[in-house]
Image 1 (cartoon, rainbow, N blue to C red):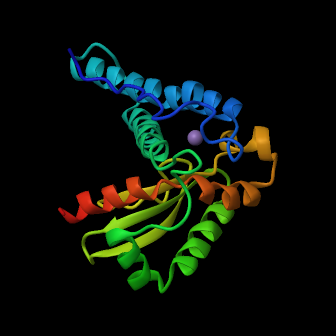
Image 2: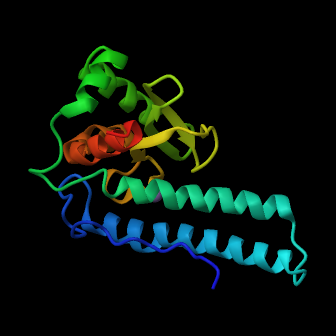
Image 3: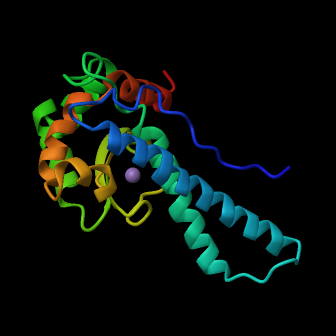
Length: 203
Ligand code: MN
């Protein structure tokens, strides 16, 4: 059987991130939006398989564009969910290697937080703010990603991702993306981010 992507379950209850992110948003976001990216990636794979067997004519460029969009949507959401944790477990500041890297590469945690927040608030249209580990230079980088895949950088490890598509906040924050971004810091799961950095460092 050909391999297919699957929707991972949320690592906590749908209402676990309240009051910062509502249960209604989490249900729609995970069960409908994330699932649509899983299904979209699988649909592109199926088209490619039929094309490889000569069973289907396809517009290769369009199918690969769909695959990139949906695959990256699936990957970023799969990191976004465990990047967050319920109140009491999330928020605050990181320790470990992450604290050292942030201090070295951004100057201070506050400077990092400002850069990441400004990135999230200014993504044009819909997209993500992402903290990466760049193994080429052994450094952390913050980049904005448009949609799920545009302006994406190859060969960087995603450590922390913040979804700023409207479906991530509109039902609760309306058009006030900035308040959503500011409140989101209360649910960041620094232990998860630290684990991703250790994996990238091979520690
Ligand atoms: Mn999303």
